[in-house]
Length: 323
Image 1 (tube, rainbow, N blue to C red):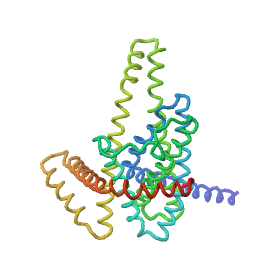
Image 2: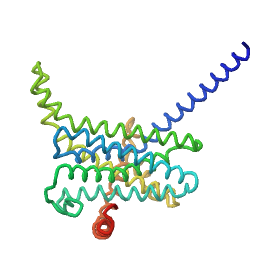
Image 3: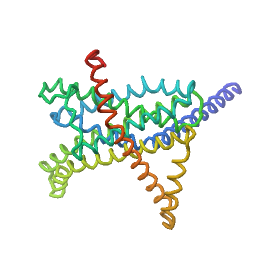
Image 4: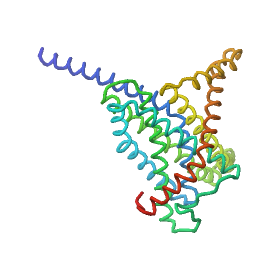
């Protein structure tokens, strides 16, 4: 009997350790996910465009296919690479973050340039605008969304990896895996709600038994185009803010702390006297400066991306259509 009690004590102790480990993983995953919030917002803002123009019955299946591709991107490809970097080349994390940050700046600046009438719409993969079979168009849209997601997911996972303290290999792996699942569920759950909101509004407007429900349904339908525009604006701002912030922090990590120090000194001076709102004002000023720097860098990178990288990529696609 004493042996059984001792065994139960051991099992209870192991369970407590396991529970503590799970709590640590969840806590670290939540913190790491919060660090990647800007890229997450952009991911959620960008994705709804991929289901525009399709039959309502195809919207959720398309979102599911993109979400499945996203989780494969994170768990099958990016998680092992992230763990390998952390174990064997931790010095490569900051440059990779900066590369991803530069891409976010480029994307954000390019979107603003298009809104202002500069640049051009890329159309299909070959630049054409010819109509195509809906099934083929869906395949193309899903493939394009998953490729875009890969870049954003790489940024999210790298930010999360940089935010995780040294927990040991398995704890880092579990934390990154949890970050991947949490963010994918959050992003594509939100996307599913966004793309089906207008259908819900139509149903409420047509079938609602109470006038207030019907009025609310009509309000949802009327508001959704503006909501989508607002999401794109928020997503673009998040791209520039996160991208600029990553570049500034990366320069500090690589031995050039002056831009980081100057921005924070300027923010502290500008926010002085805001009373209880000092910390919030300081954060907003820092975020605004980071966003402006991101816009400036992205604007510089636009000709590089459109005149150099895009033609090279298109040439590679012609040589190997699988790319």
